[in-house]
Image (tube, rainbow, N blue to C red):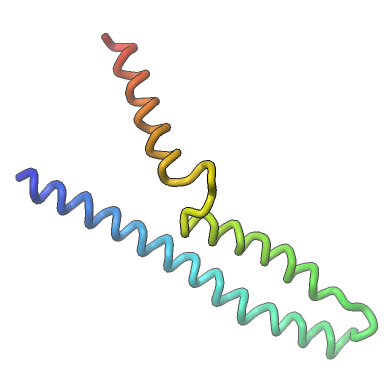
Amino acid sequence: MEVNQFDSEKYEKAKKRVKELKGFYSHLASYVVVIPVLIFINLFFSPMHIWFYWPMLGWGVGLLFHALGVFNMFPFLGKEWEQNKINEILEKDNSKWE
């Protein structure tokens, strides 16, 4: 029975990871499609007033933080920190009941 539970946990973790990756790649794909459209619109309709770099920069920063989170590149608040915090909270809750 434990083997199935362990396999089930591994499957759920893998499924969650795939969902995170899919979300990031969808975010990246929409950025790659929309930003050139915004550049075209800006340069075609108002070439004297360049504004496309604002959404490109803002969305790019959001995309960067999304990548850092998905690929666990945060030196703080990463997956290990999250697991340690969960364990810490569980230990505190257990000590309250003892």
